[in-house]
Image (cartoon, rainbow, N blue to C red; front, side, top):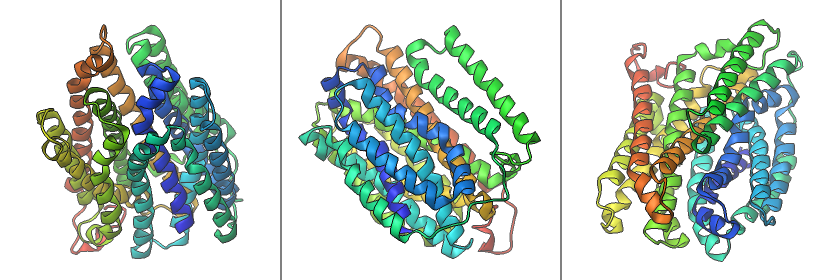
Length: 460
């Protein structure tokens, strides 16, 4: 369990560790703001677009086999990314790392959920799993600042030895599992589904530069809708679908996925915005920026292992709602507090609330999305949840970038960022408020039960 959790933590670390390094990468490689977002979005694009295929592949080919191959690809792509001198090649390596993560994440989650029976044991395991994911994400913010002081390339090279250690440990420790020989290979569904997800994320990422109402953007959205319609038709007719559509009838699973989309969309957009703001406008160094995020990282690292009793007592719907409320308040504080205020007043309260929000919601999303799902579809459930997280992140980042570009038109440098800062933060807060609505719907529409035993059931 610790081996697969380590790799998921590494995936999460890789998403965030590039954050503080973005201004240094931009200056060194001469990237525009629109091109710079691809250093983040390139990873998110391939990660979010291929997760469903990754999850189903783990079920069909064997979770251990898929996990080992994907970790090896991740290590190689990390090494190459730290050595290239061209912005386009750097983005390509990020795309490849996203592909690898799209296969490791659902394979790792399904290894855990098929190893531990549903109930307290699985919840405890998923809690540890979530700790590594959330802590990896938070630790990446801090490590990025430390490494960027030396050179931004180290943010790409650091994952290499960690991935190699995890690869050796996984090869020795992970038990061999039997692939699902009863299922067939839904090749048409896989091709159409992956094409739809990639086109959707690509369109959203490119829209800020091309224009949301441009003919090209509208045509791509229309093509995405047609591909999704074709995917639904294929999945309903094939004997062995890539995604059994009936799984989406689970209310908890649907709420977990929609809630995770909005939750991570707001946060990734916030991270991108604040990283640029602190360094480009306030003149913070990469190390100062990393230390500014340290309180959130510490709260996640030390608080997440203690979440299991809280989830057992209150249920996933309530802990998710509490986590989203913390993010809403954190965004509003950052929006309303005077920018000239000292760190303890202007930044620290938001960071504390962001850490609390992640701590409360992240493990709960994982538990809620997999509760009541049979072992044969745990890879699919894991793929769906991680797809929601990454697609949400891509959409949030693209929308925030669009607002920044639109409001900063005709300006350059810090002035352009300042012009779009408040509107972008309003949009981020809107993501969180919408997520709060989803979380509250899970509390309002829960079936009544005589005792707490339903808290972690599929209705939790």
